[in-house]
Image 1 (cartoon, rainbow over the protein chains, first blue to last red):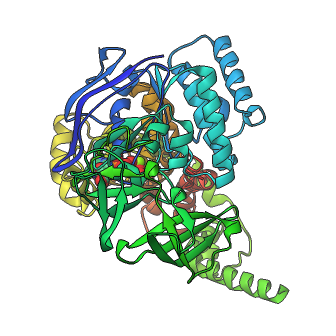
Image 2: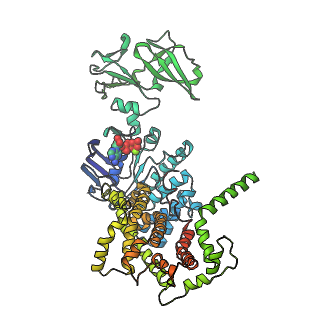
Image 3: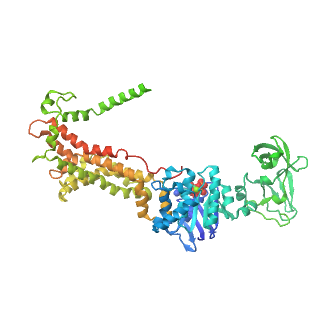
Length: 359
Length: 275
Ligand SMILES: Nc1ncnc2c1ncn2[C@@H]1O[C@H](COP(=O)(O)OP(=O)(O)OP(=O)(O)O)[C@@H](O)[C@H]1O
Ligand SMILES: [Mg+2]
């Protein structure tokens, strides 16, 4: 297993600049997830690591060896495609064995490895079928089996679960996680599903428009997003970001002349304040400085997903326990606990206040 | 419901009869003796005879039907397989690498639109210099050119139909070009190869013009040879023998078509991507 590094990697398709100078190191044995909105260049970046797409400039290293100029078959990586890409004319057994046969491994070793992979992925019954006689989930497992038998330097996954239904996606996600644990392999995983990203990743790389917005563990990214993009990309419903202006005297003005008091720290550069829906406290209208009207109410079982019209501040999304029995049109008060606030400057970058201001 | 089905079959049989009338008439004529042909034009044969077939299948000092069949068979086989050998690598490179897609591909495919006769004179001259006149190989080469446009078109479509992810997956699995082609692309193109072979063979078998121009004796194909039977004894056309020789000449491509019918068309790539 191996370390994969990208050094100032850029990619342009004719005039279109798709990847803008990405540098990143995926450590040995790490599960690294690329997330980002559609079209941000996740697949392109993964395909460049695979060697299926050339780089315009920059270097790609595997275990400190420069592989930028190598063809995919010389990089010893495995890839699981979104569309599975199984060989339709070969049986499941032959599909899984393909890479081993290509590498001219001895027959009994191939048989043994295929049997092992089939057992791990519960494919034993289907070994002699053609892919066309399998369900989507089974095909997905064959694709994974094909990737794992050859013990590659790293695994690449391009949205492997996006063609599965919700239940199967959850199941397969858990299988992939346990696979990572048992193999201890370096894995790079592309998804636009933040649940997959949060649950699977050791480290998440958030991409937007071909640039890395932030790299960090799921918890880091969720609790200390480095900019408004990351703040709003992770978490569902997404974080509320409110226009604000720091006064420089330890408090912050919100639209409509409402003030948030901060105990300490220089707040001068703050232009935006963020708060997650689940961290807004719903109170009585009477004892709150910020009030609003429930505009929309979605019942989600354990929680209510509210959209609250908070006057000059704008619409806020709020999660409330469903026992609170809030109805549309009701006036409520909203509490913003200071320790739950995130501050951003005019360019959307995170502003850190002194430790006294944050818990 | 039953009536519906019966009606459908009646209409179907009627149409089939009309469409195939020339074939049926030829076959029936082949079973009539010369005297019956001149007196009985109906579709019912009074006294069926195989006499005409015996005439056709008997080797005389002037006519040898087996020789023509063999000439046609070997020339048509060359004419069907050679363009596949040339066109397959060309098709793959055109589809996957983009070379020649803009100019060469339309140029070759449009060869089909030109009347072939305009090539006759230069070909004749070239063949006489290269000692290819009246040889089965020479005839096969010309038939290969006749077949090249269709072959290229079918194979380009076949390669383009293979999802690119399959080739990428093979690369990721460590396959270099020979294994990629041999183990993934070729097997997936098999239905296209069969289709191409059947069409190419039939086209080549039925070709008449170049067979007439480029052969005189040793390499005379069945289509040209058949015409020799029309006037075996100098005078008028012997319709019975002519019909019999046409039946014999039509049989090989017919059998090939019937045997291969199930294999023609049909795609191999189902189950490859998504569900
Ligand atoms: N071969 C290509 N030629 C030109 N542009 C391309 C090519 N491949 C991708 N692009 C462009 O590059 C950008 C990034 O594409 P990419 O497939 O990497 O996005 P993605 O992040 O994987 O999106 P998704 O989540 O929808 O899969 C897109 O704007 C796309 O249009
Ligand atoms: Mg993608």
